[in-house]
Image (cartoon, one colour):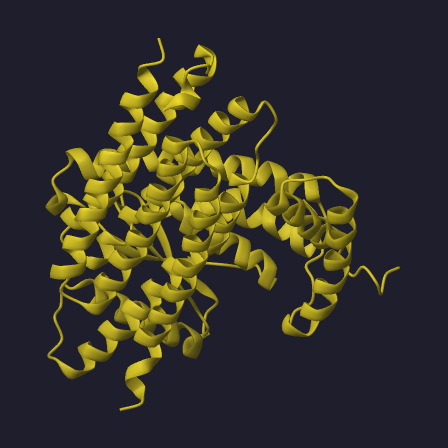
Length: 92
Length: 134
Length: 167
């Protein structure tokens, strides 16, 4: 009876993996620097989601702390990079 | 997957549905990031990933752990709140950085009439003109 | 009391965050959380140039956020449909201008949050010369509709909440 959940979980995990792959593609081909920053930010989100799904898969709440840390670090690093894009090139 | 065996049906079905929905929306957002032709359109793709994709998976996780532990497990709300507060700032900063960079390049290169940034430059000029006349 | 707790709501939110992070209601956590909830706003006070926000009508804020989340859900589905089904060359992505009257920085921050969380719209800039908001819209059909929606649905309630202007 409980076979629905594992299938749904595998589906969600493969979706998130493919999404992360798409982000990597955009990160590689992205014509401009702001494209790459946007792709990197989305990649942070995807990896955070992957951590949450792994937590569900193994039934462990440790993964929650990892996900929270990834979210925090992703925010700070994206803000730093966006700020650099906006102001960094002035100092040439 | 031993921890799933005594999960009641009323909890496992909504969790499964939310997981499928969350995965689908995440994929859609990233597909938009890859597929759309212009940066100013691409920035709208990840918003779906962040609001609905993350939201669905976080609710699924809350539901599952609350049933497994037989007490309300609410700490996923923290991630939700944090993301809801930080994502607007991130997208606004990236957008402004893109506009600044494009404007700077626009000054260097010959002006294209139809590009989005030309439209934006006109908006800025109009705004300054409005103030002078008023 | 006023000096010790400049913003009770903020302190309560901090205490709740602390309890959620530790996942317990033990007395020790309650005590430590309360100390943090009192000290952190006092220490962060000089960092905020505009002071703590004052909510004139908190219930209206709750209703506004509820309406905004419905709107976010709605436009999420719209944008996903566009990404999955429509040909991307036919999209009409535009910058539009919206004249704003709200001056309160807290209200503007909440407005920016709502607009950026809604897929399909991104806040670009508040033009300093004319106090107009520049918005980038993913698929524009009717610019006047956007102006009316944002001014009536969001700006008016936010002005009532943060500036205390009459309804």
